[in-house]
Image (cartoon, rainbow, N blue to C red; front, side, top):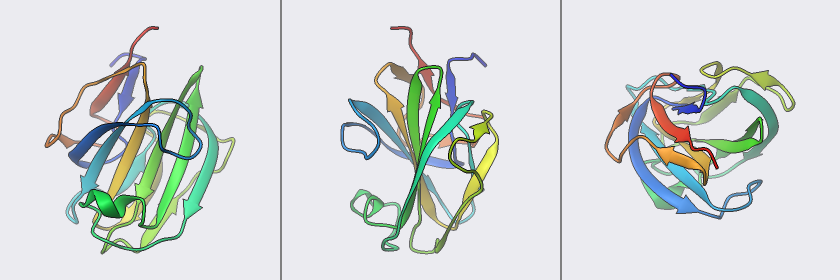
Length: 158
């Protein structure tokens, strides 16, 4: 594994990879990788990089099926902004129809290690990772990924 590797924060299946500018706390163009967690997947959320938690923004919401893109920003969610050596990315834990509880074990300004358990979602949910523009996506839609193990992207030198 390289220091430029970004690991999946969740176990599940990649359901979407899209460019976006629309996310609170982030500026500029980002790539969003969405991973759906079926009820039988491990629902632990892990740190994709080593860094510092800049902010945590919990938003109450609905509990629609997390497999459907239209529900993702309407559902209860927790957005975690992480920074490391000039790199900023975000992880969004999204509750689903069966997931009625988001757990997040860290605090703002806390230092975290890549692969460290930082929380969980109970059960059938989605985790999105917002990657800066200077990353190369290493996964594809439909691929199975594992939290703290699968390299989902790699930072590219500017």
